[in-house]
Structure formats: C-alpha cells, structure tokens
Length: 113
Length: 111
Image 1 (cartoon, chains in turn brown, cyan):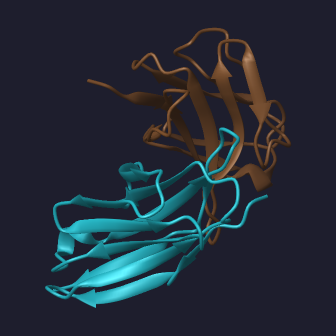
Image 2: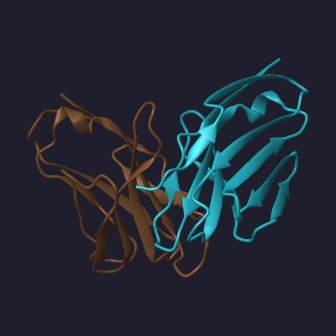
C-alpha cells in the first residue's frame, strides 16, 4: 500500500530536549516536505527536499533542521524545542516535474512544555 | 509569502442542499491549483489538481472550476451528505515547487 509514515504520532516533551520526527514514503517520490498546522492558520511549509541531499527552507524554517540522506526518508529535527513549536506536523511527498498531488502522512501532534 | 484566501471560513449546510466555496490566489506565475479534503483525525487527501484556465473537474458529487486569469477556483458539492463534513483546503503552486495553502473552509453538514 502506497503510504507516508510518520513517527511518533503523538509526543509530549520539554523545552530544550532534542527530538526527531521521522517520515518515510514507499512511492519512490523525489519531493518531500514538512508542514505545520496551527489553529487559525493554514498549513505552513517548514522545509522541503527536491531529491536526495537537496533541501530548502520553506516559509517557517526557524528552529528546525532536516536531512535527506535516502530517497525514502525525510526526518524533521528539533534541536532545542520550544513551546511555540507545539503544533500538528505533516510530512508529504509527491513526484517532481508534475503538478501532481501531495500524499500526506497521518500527522504528528507535538506538545512542548 | 503568497496570499491564498478561502471563503467562507466555515459553513453549515443542511443535508441534501448544494453548496460551494471559493479559493482566490495570485493570478501571475500560475502552475497548478490543488484541492484537498481533510477529515478530522485523518490526513489531507487530494481531490483535484488543476492546471489549465477553464479547467473543470468532477469526482462524484464534488466538482471544481478554475479561472487562472482572475485568480479564483470554486469547489461545488451537490446534494451534501453528512460524510462531506470536512475541511476543504486549496493550495496554489506558482513557478517554484512549494505549495501555498489557504486556511481552509470548514464544512459541517447538518442532518
């Protein structure tokens, strides 16, 4: 089954404790992206990657890091989480070179105390 | 940051009625316009990807139109059913590869 898998789905952590949210897709998509969803705001892009070893900042990259060492994986790293990073995070992927749809993971709800 | 506006923000519709809502986006540098349906506790799923001015797409009771010259798209739902309750997101893709999402229209179908 074609899917985008995120882990963990839910996490409560404390300020400053490094964490990683993993994202993996099995559709051989070149493009992967991270979004955050906050009440009253649309999905906002954090980082995206056009292919292996190619990453770019989205609209709200501050406080986040990403890496793309393999095509299928695109982890989101919070080196020193802060309460304003409490949010619902979505990973998504699609083929490049087409106007094609995004395939979303199920979301990761993160709370930073 | 590009401006993608959706209206209304929320909408209550009686079961069986038809409804529509709007997405407006920049009329320059257009590449594609996406519509997604997002049910509570699930992930957004694509409804339509539209690329040409005048495009009309249909999936069952849901259809969408696109006007790239004036920068708007309409989503129509005919004969609303309770399972249509969801947030409907539109997303604009310009020349770059990122998608800019609107804030969504939250649709509630009342039995």
